Amino acid sequence: MESMGDAMRVMLRKIEDWRTKTPSTTQQAAQTFGCVKCKDTGTINTFRWVEDEDYTYKGQPVKHQVAHVENCSCHFEKQLEKYNAAAGFSDKEREHTFKNAVIDDENRPNFEIAVDFIKAIDKHQQWGTWLYIYGDSVRAQNLADKTGKEISAYGTGKTYLMQCIANALTNRKLPAIYVNEEKLFGDIKSTYNRDSDESEQDVLRRYYTIPILLIDDLFSTQYTEWAEGKLFSILDARVNDKKITIITSNYATGRIEKRLPVNGGKIASRIMGQAQLVEMIGTDRRRTIQRMRKDETA
Ligand SMILES: [Zn+2]
Image (cartoon, rainbow, N blue to C red; front, side, top):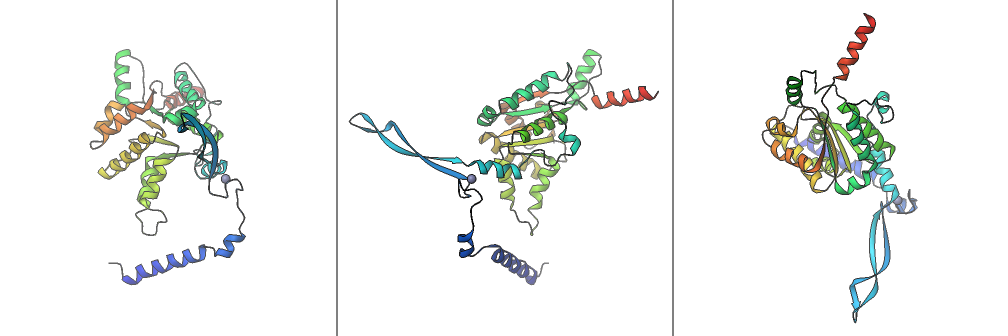
């Protein structure tokens, strides 16, 4: 059992931290603003004179002022500093771009969808469009049996395509978070540690509200009821708030329910309602490259 003394010491340390970090009023007054446009509030209030049906006098519209709040440009710069989709990428992954990609007849339609998505990103931000990039081994096997061709759900470039999208977002200075499930659930769990600076709500809010969330290899971890619940709450909030979500996965929407017995059906229906589906099955590029290397050395 924790002793009372321990809890007290932690609390005293927190109070001391808070006291030393909070500037006195004279310090505050002397401080200059990082952004003079918004005085570091992140928003700008403007008033416009308008004439409309809201105010009329003897049937005639009367001019009146309307307040308009918009985000300051520094708000987006600060967000991008914190939320850069390519931040965790290796040098090699940063080179995964639409320009560098090797395009062939098989992957061309998928790249076209992604490039068009980025071109129309402003509209998609308004609509909250999702992209669901998937390759399902059951569907690949069925198609292979039918056609007699080698068709794979793996090594088809799903992650590569999503990294191209992430790099394009960073290039356009659009705030986004790129995660896999391990990172996503790890972020939430780390708040259960009593020394955590953030609460679970802080972390969830970040995943609810980030303008663009990219999740690589969804439905790949061992799911507990807890994880299913958290995942559903994030995806559901993002549908309701119209936030772009881009997902790669090895599950066709029809098979998600089997994978996640508690919330799979609801999650699949959110994806089907909101996402443009991008199916990537076909040649296993990783295997092809290996084979080519073998041929070269033979
Ligand atoms: Zn500003």
